[in-house]
Amino acid sequence: MPIVNRIAEFAPEMTEWRRDLHAHPELGFQESRTSDVVAAKLAEWGIEVHRGLGGTGVVGVLTAGTGGRTVGLRADMDALPIRERTGKPHASTNDGVMHACGHDGHTTMLLGAAKYLAETRNFDGTIRFIFQPAEEGLGGAKRMVDEGLFQQFPCERVYGMHNMPGIPVGEFAVVEGPVMAAGDTFEIRIQGRGSHAAMPHQGIDPVVVGSSVVIALQTIVSRNIKAQDALVVSVTEFHAGEAFNVIPDSVTLRGTCRTLDPEIHASLPDRFKRVIDGVCATYGATSEIDYHQVFPVTMNAAEPTKVAAEAATSVAGQERVQRDRRPLMGSEDFAYMLNAVPGCYVFAGNGDTAAVHHPEYDFNDDLLTHGASYWSTLVERELKRA
Image (cartoon, rainbow, N blue to C red):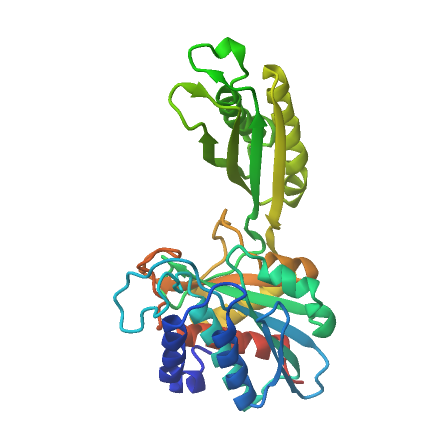
């Protein structure tokens, strides 16, 4: 079946919901209005509502038939600290905050599926509609999991979806294995000894040491990791000194690492320490390293990916489902849910729009019916009635 007819009928309603959410964006862990809207709509449709996990998170529970099997569907709700430049009538009314990643659309598509499934109940089992706060770098998924999401609301499988500019509307990308990278951050403070720039021999120049560290860190990629494996080490900040003729006491480096391999991810803190300690010892400097493993690899399990691909194919057609799309080196905190419960994370085409996190980005409302139909079809396949 293609787009679900009933969902197509209330597409104008979904567009109104989405544009209302877009006009009232909220940052991570501040999604009070958004979660109020979500909770009210779920309750209106007779779905059991639970609030408070992750602070502003909402979980809706809908059961039909025996209620035996369980599946979780997740959408993120937060916006970004970006000043919008779309000029749209529904543009952000919260200056400096905008839905630049499409979470307004993600929330709306899951609401659309919830409305349809609450009406039809053409499934046998229990659905957990998981509306997550703070996906944008704040770890809302981890907080929900840590606070007992899957203990309070057990799921056999959990699914996520993200819009993707550049993929035509009506197309999906579904890939088994790693689909998005682990994402880490680091801060390195190198302590040298300051001196006059005309007499560098009297000090230990941390700028030179820091420069050597920047280069040496790249040997982790080029000489420690197999060429077939993906790893990115990027130093994005280098802070040093305040005067043109003074060698400073210390420098601070910051940056990020991305990899698609969980074993490489686990090894990075030790690899960093070994390289940095060695470089600093060569020059007589010392270092402090603050390494944070922020997001795991987003890893799709085999059987849930098969079901997700079948659902996407049912909605879009075989030729409009990409099964060989290469993983992205960006990160996604849905990985924490996939670490706890097997599942699948898919991409849905947003058409020819600005890139996500761009001030001119806007979610494509034409995607709403495709996404809601995918969610509904997925449930009806996973929790198929006998």
